[in-house]
Amino acid sequence: AFLRPPVTYPVGIDGIVIARERFVLALHAESPLARLDVVHPAQLRDERFALPEQESGTLEIGRRGQFHPQIVTRPGRLVAVVTMVSLGSGVAVVPHSVVDHIVIPDVVYREIHGGVVPTEI
Image (tube, rainbow, N blue to C red; front, top):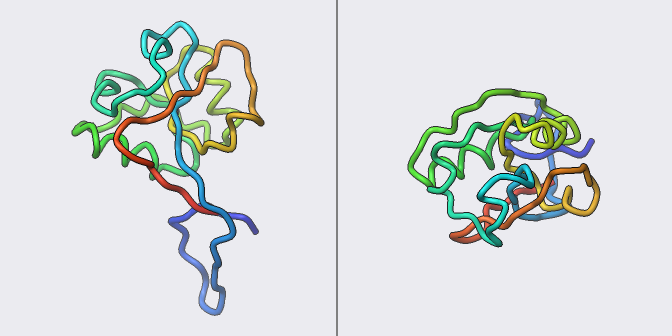
């Protein structure tokens, strides 16, 4: 199986890291933040979030920006999360690998200021 930590493995099962990447933001193309190349976490304080299965990126953005993310939807799967962003139902913190693989109208991806927010598979 391919999983993103944190994951609790059953007794006798171990995991190995096969890939590392960073999180980025998925924003609606008409969001004022979409005009920026890089978004500071504090600029997301008043945003609503669509939460993927992997919550750690969103929680880390909130920690860095010193706010508690306002989660309005939990669609889970990345395609569903990015679809919610395209419908204007929030912003999302997603793995960089989606940038070239999930292309949906009205969604742009932006880097996060302040150093890499890492994720692993």
